[in-house]
Length: 544
Image (cartoon, rainbow, N blue to C red; front, top):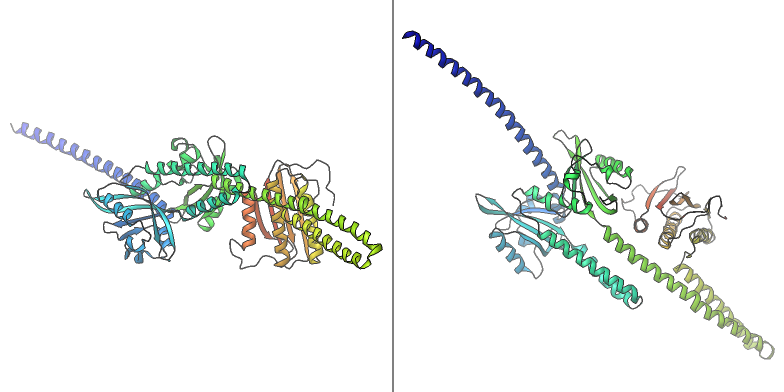
């Protein structure tokens, strides 16, 4: 009997020891899983926090009474307030305009736990500027009750103003270019249809309980992120729509090298974003169907807790259509200038020439019978001759580049001659081989860039020697203007003056790359390069 009890005790001890080992094993396994889940949550929070901090759109949270609870840097920058100052404000403090009923309706709908999409409200920022916002808002819950509101807002003031200016441009051109106006009206309708389609897409955004995930997945801006390997780890819906690649096709498979038109641009993005903390430029991105779009891209580094860069976040907006419309409007302006110049030269100029001949005949008839009247006729002939010269100069100024393929060479050569004579400096044109440009938009804008660069060199740089160069290597056309002036000012603004902004704008219109840097021996060098179908005749040197 005692032996049975001892045996049962030993069995019980063995079972308890086995149970203890199993419990210890479960605790170890559970701890590892807990830490894994905790690390995943930390990474997810860091990812969405980075998006929140660097989103170009406004993201903010108000409590149920309208007072601000939180806001991203873009909101604080627009308002010109600190977070502490903003938290003392109510949404009604910024409201202006006549759509107060819409704002009240928005609050009522949100209290009923329903989202609001596409609401346009006019507000006054903390800096006193009145702007138009387009707002998407969703309620946030605690214990099943609405306690605050998450809002995503975009400043559409420029878009509204651009639409108004575009409408005015159509009206002004209607009387002069009837057929072209029909095309512009069609384009305007297409643009409005695209805007309407975009609004419908924004209204289809579904609500997510995770506010940062809602921002990333549904904000109508390209958002992508790459990790240390260079491959994408984030690809939102806007990126899918813009480029045609699904997230499944991109994440863990593609790198920026697969999307950029110029591979060197990828290295430039990494270099600038790493050095300055932000990359903000227009780039060409390749779609899945091998076509390209123009994107306004902002890239910021993703850093770990030690400050080490472990990847990059990119935010982009498709501006292809805007660039096309800008170029189209500029083309219309250039054609209208050409028409006016031709009318001056072939119309008024020819009439003045005919009058000059008729007056000369009258002068010859009066010479024998009325010398005094003949001298008066001679003075009239001189005035008519001066008017003819002024008319031709005016026509040449309005229409500086000939339609012929070699018109750019001739115009740049004449520009150099005129500058040398007028300013009493050395200005030469160098073109080793004949360059033909069949695109009038390219040739006209390159001429105006050269005109602005030479003017800056003489007026601001105080140059005594200016050299204008034109070269063609395969399908790359390069214009250069170098001088021996005082060089670029040390305190020059990042965007430069109005002249530099105009040159940059003209370069972007024709898809060119504009660079301005100091010369090796002093002065300044301006270089503008563009890929074109133009080609100079091989082996045939241009006449100097």
